[in-house]
Amino acid sequence: MTNDSPLVREFMETGKCESCPVIDTHAHFGPFQGIYFPNVTAEDMIATMDRCGVKKLVFSSHASLIDPRRGNPISLDTCRKYPGRLYAYWSINPNYPELIPDDLSKFPFIEEFVGFKFLPSYHQYSITDKNCQPVFEYANANKCIVLCHTWGGNLYNGPQQVEEIVGKYPDMTFLMGHSLSGAWEDAFRIAKEHPNAYLELCGIYHHGGVIEQMCGQVGSHKITFGTDLPWFDPHYGIGCVLFSHIGDEDIHNILHRNAERIFGWS
Ligand SMILES: [Zn+2]
Image (cartoon, protein in one colour):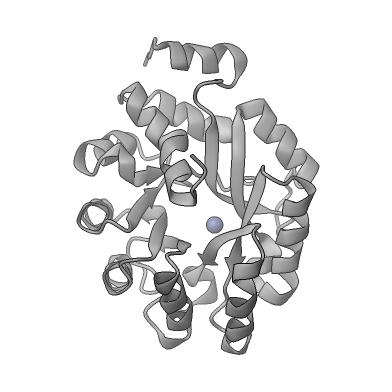
């Protein structure tokens, strides 16, 4: 497989590309039980980003996904070490609904937080159930971004749940983390029919041909790049995008332009 465009050649020769900075819209941070990560500190993360040409990265700390009250401050402290490079999602665990009013009252005053994060399959709580709705109502009213893990064949965040939520809250930008992996036709249809629904590439690069299908059936303007760093190295995902059978304009859209537009960084 080859791609001899100057953009790809620059990535291959230097590991990055000046005219095509990368924005990672789906990352994590910090240690995680039962697995060793070699690059787990903020400094490690920045070194990896510099090596791979990742200009900005939006993450949720692992701690915040399980215990938001402890973990969201960890995310904030990490962002403040590298302003302009690291941004965070405010993690919501709907199993603790008593925290949510306080979360929503603080969120707008902390600029490092650029959206909300949901992890329904870990929380075993459907995005269509009641504890999630105040966050979506807020996100819809304030045109916020939500990154939500989505999986085909899952009752907490499967096609049916995602379609219901993106239709009900059209002013909220909804990044479908992992793009409903496995339920590809549903993912493509939802991203095509709903202007606020985006495909996100984290964790699905091993599905050969999926990026070409997304570009062909939905359009590269509806796809964002993600890595799950520190789980996966950015060069793996970047390489998969570069060597998909897509054009340079599609590569720019996926690697940075869509995120710049969504997050207002252009
Ligand atoms: Zn995630």
